[in-house]
Length: 125
Image (cartoon, rainbow, N blue to C red):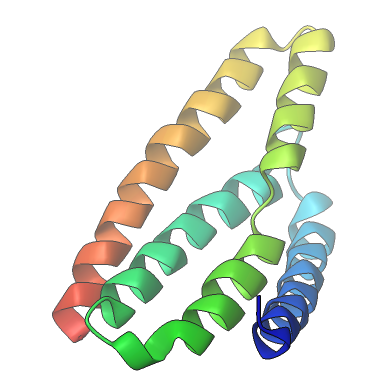
């Protein structure tokens, strides 16, 4: 492990975590019972990671960008642990159908978003 790579990931992670907090603060109070902030962050993060990896796939010199943006920013931005907790909370509060929708919807929408991002990223490369 190179120290410069670790610093890129740490810096990117701080940016991504800050962005995640901002989205949660802005959207959280408007969610109406469904964890829209987490859902949106995970789907958006999946698209952006697909876009990034597609755009940088043929560029061997892009490793610092992959580390900063992919591992750092998007790793800090997306929130699987929050997804799991919020799904369990919905289920334990008696909203089992919302819990299932949250988990399945995020999985399906995330896969579709990542695939779309990959296609767009490769087209832009």
